[in-house]
Image (cartoon, rainbow, N blue to C red; front, side):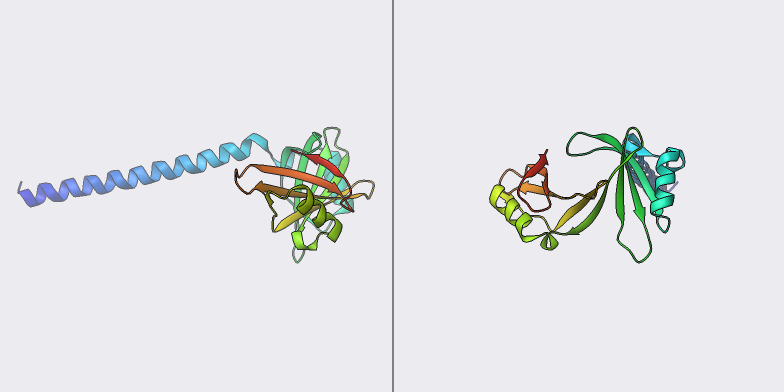
Length: 174
């Protein structure tokens, strides 16, 4: 074999090794992501009948996008179900471990929060960067709350804080 032939063979082997390495790294990345999602994710085909019935009755024009186990700011554990609808904002519904409807979350702009609620966050969390988005939470009894994710300006420590509809009281913080 000539030097050029050996060089080409080695070059082809290197190319194949690079392709194999990229393939393995990509497969590992996707496996890791799937594993993370699988930990809290729930197959929507296995949602409890009471949850599906509630959604079909009250949100018939929406489709279930995904579901996962979740814990609310106040510590309530249950199932969060993300719903989507063409030409409408996505919403999330939360059901407790007894499959009872607890609340609906809708993403809104922080600037759309009532002035008293914005004042609550800027007054009580002056060292935190105010977010662009917030969550409007409507409880099963119709009570409205607002929740934001705040980040401390220097340490970058994040907090999730919920307040009542008029910004006069903190509901919870974690």
